[in-house]
Picture 1 (cartoon, protein in one colour):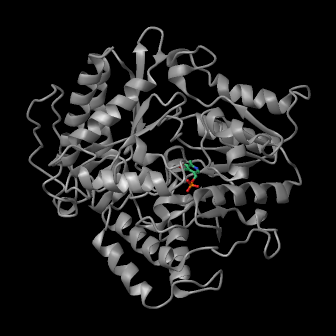
Picture 2: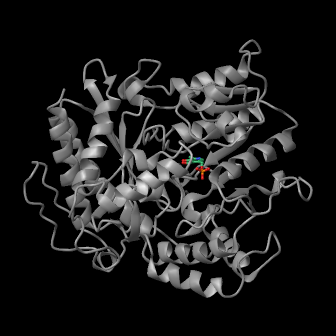
Picture 3: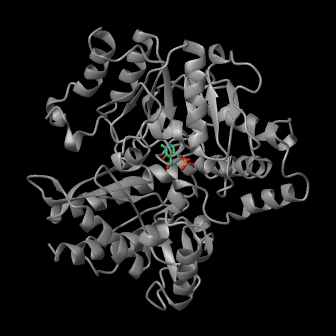
Length: 494
Ligand SMILES: Cc1ncc(COP(=O)(O)O)c(C=O)c1O
C-alpha cells in the first residue's frame, strides 16, 4: 500500500529487522536439518526448546481420559480434537504441550490466532495488568479501548477511519460489515466467492460456500450469490497463469453488468484478500485491485475479510497492503485479541458511518481484556517487525515445499504467502483428483510425530500451515522435516 495512504506516524514495515533468519532446509526425508548461522534468537526463547518431543504417542493415557470425558459430556460438534486427538496443557511461542508431556511444533497456531506466539510474555504482562483493573464495560470508552483504537488507526489505511467492535467472534464482524453495507445501500444482495469461509452464525454462514456447512441449515439469508475466486490451480475457466486474463473477475463484472444475469444489484462484495479455509489461495496480484475497480464501477461496498490474513500473517500488517487495495470495510478478529482473547471489529470509511446507535449491538461489544492484549500484541508486531519475519520465513519454507511439489506424486501444488501456506494433495497430478484422505493421514502422521497442522480446501485436501509468526528458522526446519517424512510415508499408501 502506498505510504501516503497512511497516517503520518504509521510505522514503516519496509526495512530489514533484527530477527532476520537464515534458513537452509533439507528436502531429503530423515536428513539432518541445517539451520543457518544466523537465527531468530529472540524468538527462540519464546518456545519450548525441547520440541518436538513425543514421550508417548498421542493420544497418551491422560489425553485419552480427557477425550473420553469430552465425548461423553460435550456436544458431538467438537472437531479439532477428533483430527488431532489430545488434551492441551500449555503452550509457548510456536510450541504446544499436551497433558501427557508431549511437545509439538505448532504449524496450526490456534487456527491462525496466535500470531505473536502462545503466552507471549509482553502480552501476558499487559493482560495481567488489565485483569486487576477492569474486565467488562460494554461500549463505554475505557483507557485500553482507546489505546487499541489509537494503535489500530496508525496501522490501517487512513481511509478506514471508523472502528466498531462487535461480539467476540469473527463471524460477528462479518455480520456487522454486511449489515453496514445493507443499511447504507438499502439493497439486499451480497456477492461472495466460491471457496469462501466467513463464519458460522446464520448471516456469516450464508456467505460461506461449503455445502457441508450450509445444507443442513437452508434456507439461509436470501440473495447471496457465489462467483469463482482466482483459484488458479483449479481454474473453472480452464486458464493457465500464462493465459489468464482474470476471467473470474471479468465474469463478476459481467454478472453485475448484465440485467439478465439474475443477480440484483448487490449491497456488497465480500472477499478474502487471500483465501484461508478455502485452501491458502493467493490470487494473482491484479485480482483484488480489479475487485476494487468493479465495486467502484457498480457502486458496491467492498468488504475485505482480513480475519485470518490480517495482523502480519501474510507478510504485511493487512493482506490488502500487498496490492495497495483500500476496501470500504475491513473485518478483523483472530489475532486482534493478542493471545486468543475473543474480540472482533470492523474498520470502515467515514461515508458509511450513517447508522444510528444500537444498530449492531450485543452484551460483548468489545472485550476489555482483549483491548489490552491486542494493543500489546500490536506493539510487539511493530517492534519486532513481525510482518517481515513472516514474509521471509514463509518464502524460505515455500521454496522447500516447492521441491516437495516437484518430487512428490501426490502434492499437486504448494502455495501461500508469508506464514499462511498450503499443500494440496491429489491422487493423480494429471487429473488433479483431490485426495482428502491423504491430507487427513498426513495430519495424523504429523501429529504422532510432534507437528500440528490444519486441513482446509474445497475438498479438505489441503494441508495448511498457520504457525505463530514467532516461529524460528530451527523449528520451521524441524517441522518441515516431519511434514515431508509424513508425506513420504502417506504417499506409499496410494
Ligand atoms: C476469513 C474468515 N472470516 C471469518 C471467520 C469466522 O471467524 P470466527 O470463527 O471467529 O467466527 C474465519 C474463521 O476461520 C475466517 O477465516
